[in-house]
Length: 123
Image (cartoon, rainbow, N blue to C red; front, side, top):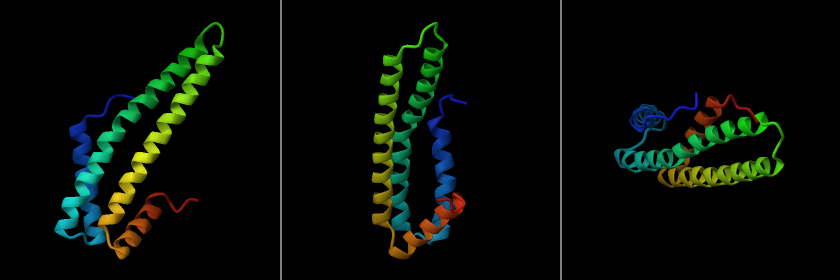
């Protein structure tokens, strides 16, 4: 856990996920050509976030393992993680809106239902 993900493997996994999604929402060829770059671009942009989160976890463990607790360093780490989460959230939201622009209202409804099933309709 925490190891770097191979971008080629991520790309292959996204291809499989998108293939299933296309069937579920009955995507046109034009939509497929638009959706893949949106999803893959967002994934490429967000992959480094994963590495930074794992690095921050390692840093937190290191800070807590020291003889004395450096509260300022912990606060800096916390603030950095909040900024990182905000950036990731913004990028994800941008991709979600871009995907929504490509889909019809009915397809967006189907996608929302699919996401609800993925997440067990929690909330």
